[in-house]
Amino acid sequence: MMSNPPAVGDTMPDIALETPDGGSVKPSDFRGQKLVLFFYPKDSTPGCTVENQDFSALADDFAAAGTALLGISKDSPARHRNFIAKYELKAPLATDAEEGGLSDAIGVWAEKKNYGRTYMGMVRTTYLIDAEGRIARIWDKVKVKGHAAQVLEAAQAL
Image (cartoon, rainbow, N blue to C red; front, top):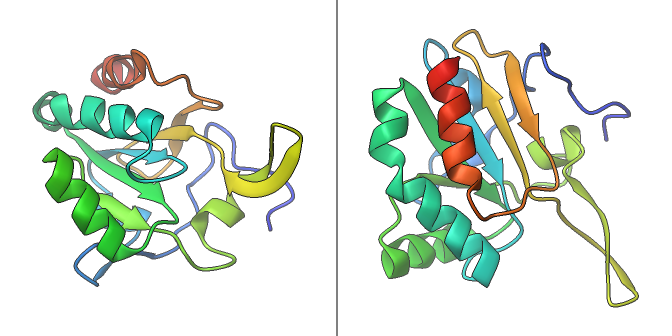
């Protein structure tokens, strides 16, 4: 686990993630274009569904701004396939199931508390990465409502 999460200006660690079709993808695959990595807790839960639908609804606008999207959770590739099909999602998803994976490396897989229970979970966090692979902006502890539109504005301005 990284002691210091990456900051604006740092290069995003280049750790491979599994795609829903069993392939792999990593941040460096997107060099030459901007990239939004949005980490979310779990497929098919209310907030995560809305967040993925909002990014999907704006997918064409992100593409027009030269910006790729990638939603990341610990859900299995099969769960991602079902989630994409059920909600007709346009934003690509990836699985970060490995211990010591990208979410561990950047500190977004962390201890959470809910109703007095402590557990490990994904902290809803979004990274905007520039065409050179450096972090341009970080949104942590994201509130879903209006978030995808905020990220789009930042991507268009970058």
